[in-house]
Image (cartoon, rainbow, N blue to C red; front, side, top):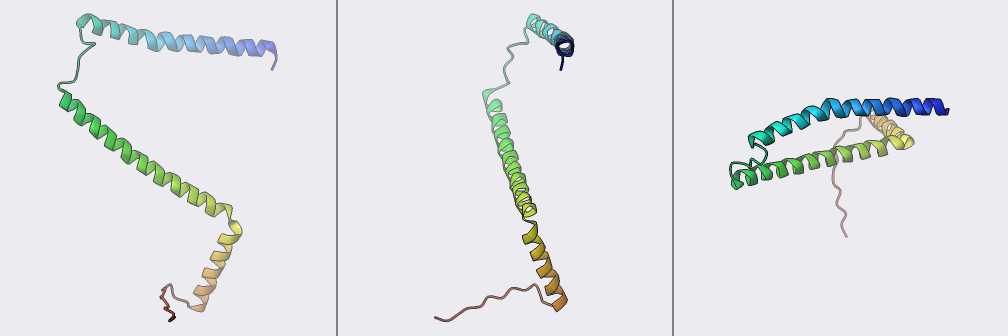
Length: 115
């Protein structure tokens, strides 16, 4: 990349960043200033108990989401491992198709050996 292109990219990036700051930041600053004038800035929740109950619900929701994410990750690891072993999976599929042709059943029986 030549220096002219690099300077152009930097200049364009700066223009976009400034536009975002003024386009988003300025209205936010105005609304915050209006709230400060009205005295709405330091409004606390209705009660500490309501805040505690709300925090408990948020914690439970985060824990549930974490469990679901872990389940999805475990499934992804399993599929990755399964797809990374193509010969073994093909051998399993071939064995199953041969069992189906032979009329083998899918029942598993326990065999107990005497000692």
